[in-house]
Length: 467
Ligand code: ARG
Image 1 (cartoon, rainbow, N blue to C red):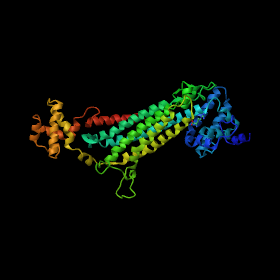
Image 2: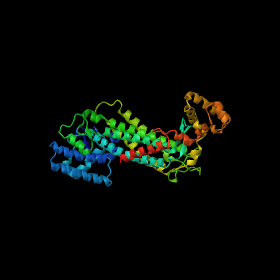
Image 3: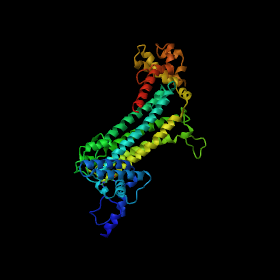
Image 4: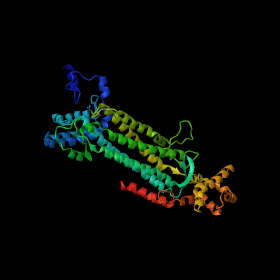
């Protein structure tokens, strides 16, 4: 009995059936408040809605529900103004329950009727995911706008495009910039799909069998901003797929950021010199005075390791768990919050880096050599009814001769051209020009100047529509 009174000092949501207090090592490992504290606004919202639902189920009177809801508002104010968890708060639900008893007295004890922390934590987590994915989506859209703006300024700049990291064909620099825009656009779609996956409300599932009090779940879901209610209480309290979906979308986003970052890091090297990073987004070296390092972009490059690691941690945590709620699931928040924190820090820094860097159009243009127009030369023959295979062979022999002579294609004499193929007239040499190469590619999605303008307008619609 003595031990029970020791337990009674801490505010606990359970414990009546135990004779002894939990061992400190159990308390320590079980505690999740340091991680899940940030669920508090969502936990308060769902509790306020639950109080109203309990009126409908004739568990609470209107007056009692109002008392509870006012108390919850005061709890929110206390937390917002800096009230911190105490050592004995097992998790955020316990903390809020303790503060509510503080604020509203014994009526607070009626709130936790017909619900469990199992449906509660799943509901609060889903509310947080919906909220945070919207915030991330906004940040992605901001980066897209930045890419769009930079692309608009690069419409008449020409640069090499690379395959296998080898100079391939000349493209409009705007075309390259927009290639990243579209990848980010798919991320936004995936983030919103993950939001839909989170939008199913588990509340009313109780611990596992469903609440014994007839709350109107559909109305409750609408109040809280869910699009539907879970159809099975066992599944509802044991389902963390919505977190896997969110982490997958975030991993995909991080992967795209890493690829954009790697392009820029490479282009910012002295060897390329296509871009120069702004002072505000460069760091120095403690030893080498000349250094200008793109640290934010390098961290973007590494971010799939951290965020993909979170995805993997979640999937491994879920694997093999039996149906229903298990304490294993408490670890879901560590992975989820870490990924959200990482991406939220990263996106503004990447946007800033892209917004402020300078493009060196002359360096880009200078990197385009006439040999990159070898395909255009073959296409020239094809337009004169030569098969592409034959044309490819003819241009191949020109490339080989240029390589032997250590010159670019446009340095080879007219007789060399004619001996490679009799249909090579002097006009063929005009194909070795980047502008002409681009102008042949006015196909939708191609790098022709008009096609890129159309693409830019399409992109503008994507960031305007979603406002
Ligand atoms: N902190 C817990 C979690 O995040 C809340 C749910 C606790 N449920 C329970 N049956 N102990 O998973």
